[in-house]
Image (spheres, one colour):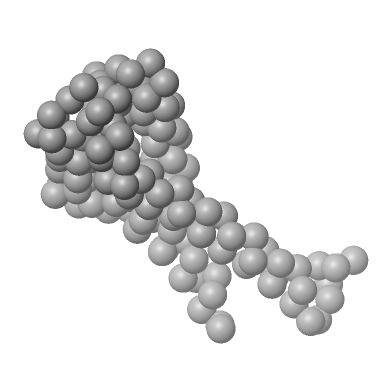
Length: 140
């Protein structure tokens, strides 16, 4: 079988899949972060909110990043980076759902709640793949 091949093809394929999954995760994480800023005027107009209310969407998103990385690091030591990353992405999915539903129904409360949930996960999704990738690419 392929597992016994000396050319390392299965190991290379696993690395490619892992790297692609991490890249996709980071793309989604940063897209969710940045797209709100690109749509500022449209969101303010469609929701009938002032600039200050729009900025609150960013404040609840970026505010948790003051403490969450420390807490996530400590938690990763206890449960492992892989488990924490999966759990964080599940929580982030709920944040995305809340933002999406809020945008569809023009519910500012749902959007700001979703942004707050995403803010709790943002930095962890960026950092947690590092301990997963480093050991698998140490020989390159």
